[in-house]
Structures are given as structure tokens and as C-alpha cells.
Length: 212
Image (cartoon, rainbow, N blue to C red):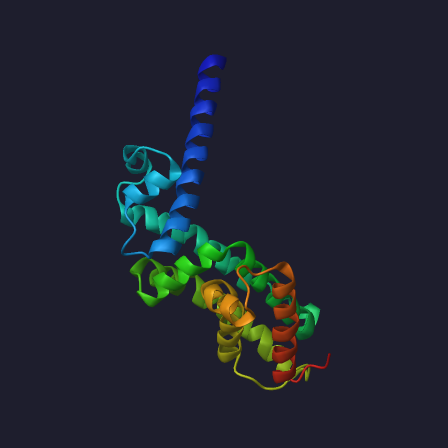
């Protein structure tokens, strides 16, 4: 009995390791090659695995892409759920901008794959956003509108505020090549992201009528 349990645990551990390797590699290849051009053979080659191993866990490229996107979408949804009424708009917006820019630095490939899927209007992504994201955004909108009523910030469109926040933070991942050219750098450094946090935070707080 104990021997069987040990074997089952080992199999589960190997499975988890293989899936983590496949998903992280797939995310990287999708981000570099694009969703249409990427093949499971490319992913297998980069992961150092036989193609058959990829298809053992994921029957098709579509299944693999949806698994990658599922992880990314969960991360993205969690990032929105950080507006706490009692903390006030200044603290929440500052924290949100900082976390989003950190995500752009740490999860650059994930952000790029998500952007590609949105541009391509991938049904899996659109269905997920409609099922989970719309309700979460409505809750955050209520929080922002409460702050407006309390006089803690100017009257602004919550929807356009979020659109601006995403554009100003996710660009450091999705268009990092452009930013490297503008800053005349081969690679972005942590200091660049910290400067971005300060600039974007000041811009958003000022637009919302929130004093420094």
C-alpha cells in the first residue's frame, strides 16, 4: 500500500514538473513566434522533449494555448481585485500601478501572449473575460464611484480609467522592444521600471484630482 502511494506521488510529481516545463516553454515560444506561427514541434524542441510528450498532456496546439491562457487570465484577474474601499484611491491606485508594472517586468511573455490573443479575438479569452472579468470590473467600478461621492477623487469614467491604467502599464511588456529603442538600451533595467511607476502614478493621480 505504501509502495503504491509512493509510486503515485512520484508520478504526480513528474506530471506536474512536465506540465510546468511545457507551459512555461509554450508561453515563451508563443510570445516570440506568435500564436499562428507556433507549432507543438517548436515547443517540444525548445523544451527538450519529444513531441509525443507534448501531446500526451495536451491533445492539440489549441488545448495547449488555452492552458497557457488560463494561467495568464487568472493572474490578470487577480491583479484587478486589489481595490479596497477603506484604503482610499491614492493607496489603491499607487499599489495597482506598481503591481501591474512589476507584472510587465516579471511576466513579459505572459502579457504578450494575452495581448496577441485579445487582438486575434480568441474565443477562449473573450468567453473567460465575459464570464469572470466583467463582474469583477463592476465591483471595482462601485468602489471608484464611492470614492468620487466621498470627494476623495474627481468624477472620472471608471471604465476609461482602467483602460488607461492597462495601456500605461502593460506597454512595458507588450511593446518592450519599442521602449528599449526610445530609452536607447539593449535591455530594460529595474531602474527603468521604477521610473515608470513614478511617472505613471503621478499622471493618474493628477488626472483623478488626487493630491500627492
